[in-house]
Length: 412
Image 1 (cartoon, rainbow, N blue to C red):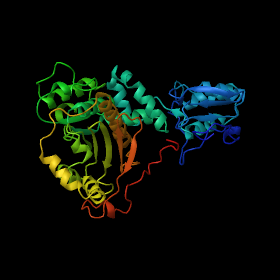
Image 2 (image 1 turned 180 degrees about the vertical axis):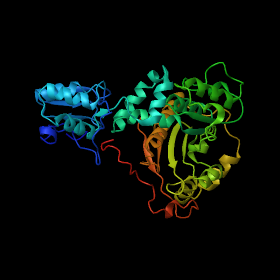
Image 3 (image 1 turned 120 degrees about the vertical axis):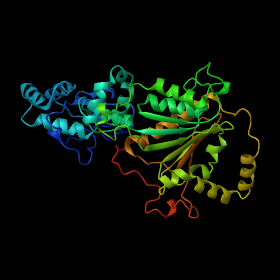
Image 4 (image 1 turned 90 degrees about the vertical axis):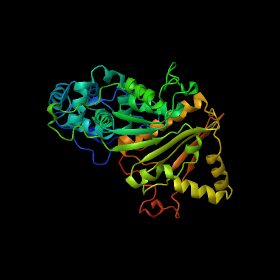
């Protein structure tokens, strides 16, 4: 069965076994692998000889038809046995020679297998220093196993997150929660930039806590980030043997979440100029007048930027530049209209989009801005196209919008 559809698969693959669509280029697992059927996918028998892994249609896969011996073999795929032992067990329960490898290859190709010992050197290092913090990340690792097909991907991607640096500009209700969520999701370094002191209305369940009013806003949120981190960051090598070990990593992403939601709804071109010049990806997020905004994700030279947004809006509404100048130069509201629930939803979706990009370089939907106007409940996608008169050059890109080409599973 293809993911997202309910129906019995046609006999194919290993001895009649069908397990949904096989990923292009899927290779046999090495003998060092310890295959494990992904525990994040709930399983249920559809009938006597077909089992479905996954309840949600987007990632569900049906495996079948299964004979008794193959069903027993699936029960052995729990991550405790390497391939040599699995082959021995397969022969013991009556499977013909080569069937164990064929079944494992088919299941891996359908994205149903993980390898709890896989993921490369970075994953091994994370297991070594993660301690109890890895238990906090188990739900996140389960989600990664569903989203990424290859065995060992969850720990590989989590280790990659640990090596990344993300900057959050803005430490109000939205920005502080974004920073905390990034840290809690395993991003190793989250920088926070903002000025001023914490106001009573900056407090949010996922961000700044009560009792911090009057303290420096950026320092307070940095402490929130440290407390949210589930595992300690990688340490530099003792003795300075690696001269590059203390180097500050390049920014993987900047999230602009200004306390004044106007700067996210109508982003200032000048504020992002250095990001465009340095080629730094950046994502906008904020709340303005009970309207939440997430996006666009700007990939310099490939997708629409703040200048594209401004030019396109001016073409649709000739009065827009005049009004925008008044709003920017006028006196801002003392207390922003930033509903707590909406700010939390915006922060959550912002981090989800950020992690999707960081984990796979995915640019699917980068040129889309999502808006949610209360009382909601639906998000409205608003495509933002590169503007031909914008000097960012995205309109002249050979592949405007830079569509995804990283081989993620279909049906996501």
